[in-house]
Length: 128
Image (cartoon, rainbow, N blue to C red):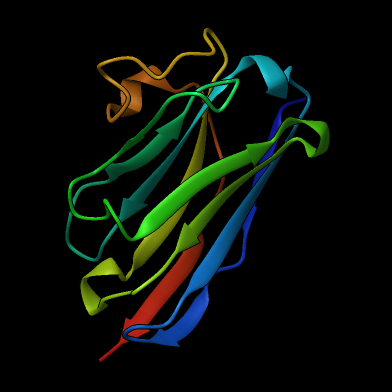
């Protein structure tokens, strides 16, 4: 059974940092591209970042580029998202997603349809 579990969310002030983690089990983690998405109140879920199976390729949404860093530890079946210089507009539920069909992010990395396993999300709230 595939399980994807996010952790690390919380309430922080603008300018502070958080690190999200995502642990996946029941799948070949080391072979899969992994993504982070978020849904802000009243908005659609959007792609935040993607990392290829070997960490050689990463993608970021323009809104987080230069502030967020995605990484993975295949030995621990864990994905990370280091979020620095947080802004109130980063407030959202953050989701971890797995593409079990490929290890590559590709041009459609930001599309929900690319991913076929999801976690329940972890809430990040940034106060001004």
